[in-house]
Structure formats: C-alpha cells, structure tokens
Image (tube, rainbow, N blue to C red; front, side, top):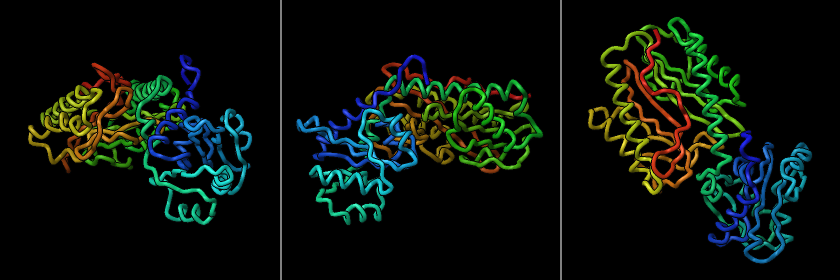
Length: 373
C-alpha cells in the first residue's frame, strides 16, 4: 500500500456504477465476478455476491448488500464495514431473495460471467425479479485507474524492475543455468522487493525457445549466443505489473541486433501512439507497420498490448481487431515481438498509463540491448 493514499474509495466506485445502471435501465446489478466485487467493496474472499442498488437515482432506501458464507463473516465485517452483509451458505440465493422482498424490479446480471446453469438456478428461485443481461459494466469503470490504483501499479512495476536488476547484479542469468532456475530466482527476487504474488507464471525462454511467444520454462540450459526472453510481473495490493525484456548471452550476432533494434523501434512507435482519444486499433497499427515495413509482419503474431490492473489481462485490448478509444488514466502494455522459429525471438514490453502528452512509463528497466558476458 502506498503511503500517499489512504485507500480506494469504494463508495465512489459504486456511485459511478449506479450512473451506468440508470443508463442501462436496470434497478440493481447482481455482481458475481470476484474481481469486480473486490473493486467495488474491497472484499477479497473466495465466495461473495454483491447487489448494487441504483437507489440514489430513485430517492429510495439504499438496498446495496454483500453476501458471503460463514468462513468470511469476520473478514467481510472488517473489509466492508459500510455495507450490510448477509451470511449464508447459499449466497446467491439469499441475495436474490432479498431483491425479491424489496421488489427491486429489473436486476442486471453479469452475462459475461454467469454460466447457463447459474442463470437457470436464478430463474428457478421465482423471486419476481426481472433478470436482465448486462455486459462489462464494472469492467468499463475499471479501465480508468484512480491515483490509488496507479500508485499500486507503480509499486508492482518497481518490484519487477528490482527483481530483474537483482538477478543481473548477482550473475544469475548466465550460460549453464536452466530456464526454470532463472524463472524461480526471478520470482523470488520480486518477492524480496515487495511483491505479494507474481502476476503469472514467469516466462524464461532461451535460444530457439525465445521464438515461442508464451514458452513455459523448462530444463533447457542457457548457452552463449542465446537470446533470453523474460516476461514477468509482480502483484502489489492486487494490482499487476507486466514487463518483457530480451537479453543476449555473449556478443550478439548481426541478425540478433537487427531484430532487436526493429522491435525496439516498433515498441517506441506504440508508446508514442498512446494518447487520450486514440483508437486502440490505430495504436496497434502504429507499432505493427514498423515491423511489416521491414518484412517481418507474419512474425508479429499477437496483439500489441492489453489493459492491466486487478487482472493481468483486462480491458482495453490493443490489437488489430480491437475497438474503442483510449482514455486518460487507462493502464496498458505495449509489447511488440518478432519470432523466428528455429532461431530465436525478441519481445519488449512496458506497462504505461495513458496521459495527455507523454504516457506515464511504469516499468523503468532499460530497453537498450543488454549483453550478458
């Protein structure tokens, strides 16, 4: 937690959601996604249902309520002291029963989260509520980060930066070590520098494995002449960082310098395109055209980036097929890559926050080609 901020304003977040509920013509929203519940309340347990009522638009009593089971009765009281809590083993059933008793009318549910079986069970309760599918309302709010969230993202990025620096300083990325050894050492180094978890399974890909975009570390031994691609991140207070750096063991070959410099130019173009109001597909295009013009378009096989926050992949997507525009305060990655099967590959990735003018760069490790002798 960052000392500059007392913590997230969950009540304000629920207030912003109520505006969306009114716009979408629902009287309340049944939130079942645990990440969205954490965002709206601060609750971090593994079982919860939240009913957010648009009461302030109707002048009625606020019926917002959170439900969980008996394992979390003390936790919910501590983490969510400003909301009524219902403790029940059949959590969703109890919350819907209350909604029926309160005659809330049209209640939205997260159609992108709720399974067919769960939806059927909701209908079978016959609460008198009209269940209305909604899609991504909370995620829409989560895209724009507030100062507290940006502080946590910055701390997570700092833990990752420090972790990689520690490995390089201690000579733990060198010929003779395995991908798994480097990956585990990097994860532990991030913990030593403030991480509470890792964002995802750390990728360490050496030699020909570096041409596999999401290679999982194996017992492959690092060798002189290898590209070593490291894709990793730390979690601080639930917020994720994401960074990729590609190193060379020993003197780089000409083809390695060529590919690295190409990806670096592409990544710089993508960063420069991050502006409020920019179309996400156009940001992708700004980086992709650099690689395409060099004749390596087919070797850039994924989107340019993605949103990052309480989840490692969240809205918005930044790809050829993505839609929408960037807003100030959105946190995204920029991560072009070129992958040459049987030879090696390069990816360079940063986490940034969109701002007017220059985006706020959160991952500070140098992007110059690092040569490990």
